[in-house]
Image (cartoon, rainbow, N blue to C red):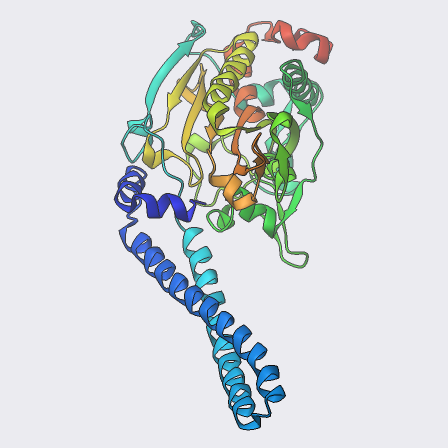
Length: 423
């Protein structure tokens, strides 16, 4: 969440940047400042009363020694009165703190200066392209037909066993999935990311730490009896490794990668654009996460983008990078780049990765800090990215690499699959 210091330093700037995300923040920012003023007033009164109580308590013994019982009794009465007032003020102070936290949790992160204005995906900006679109004819099959033709993904069986959006991967389809996961993990390892295998469910505190709660609870699968959530991305458990942690400056950056299945309810999704692998409730993904010093986080963001580019180049997929406009960004992000690949049969771009810098927004929720050379603690910056999400990668690989003989497996995956064509 935003720090109170950021809001107090320049409320109008904060309101203006929130507007870039399509968020009208004037009312909530005004209320936060009013509560802060009340909180400071109460704190000053509590501090003054505490000082008075200390002096009165010390005076009682002196008055008794002087034989001034009446004065001592009056002092005791005043102490009792002030203690009663103090309890009421402390209760009001705690209520102010609760209200302040609740309000701060409703305020999105500020988009950085490079974020373009706009409210929808139509306002996103293409910043880089790569790869070549394959010259397939009009008879190219979409991936759901290819999956059925070669018996590698069974959507109907998934519906029978669980429901729509939970496919079975079969035979060479299952091996292709496993090959992609291992390839992505190996590439992340080569790039210096330390692999972790996290839990696939998290508690409520972890959801609040990375900003999925209270913003996205409707999209997360919840296990009420245990108070746990199925993760929508490995970002959540991996970033929460650093919740309530103070790192030493020499220990930064921290770079982690993790494979996980991901679960998203995707409520309201329907139509041809969510057919097949385009939109699933359960899917596999490899995530990269970085914890950085603030001055290094944007250089880290560029490294993460280059890493994802390299994966797509090795897979031989046509791709482009979008800088998301304010209105299309996540609640927690300061800047986000989406990677999309070309789907030859569907004749459309499919998102396969988001790479984001959250600056100190998540770190403030997580209380993720580092101790600098002067022994002062400061908030870290957090970043993450999909490297990569599998379903649409698989969709594009099947469609773009189809031939009369079968589907050609990219060279970089063959040592993992053990075959070079799906036939």
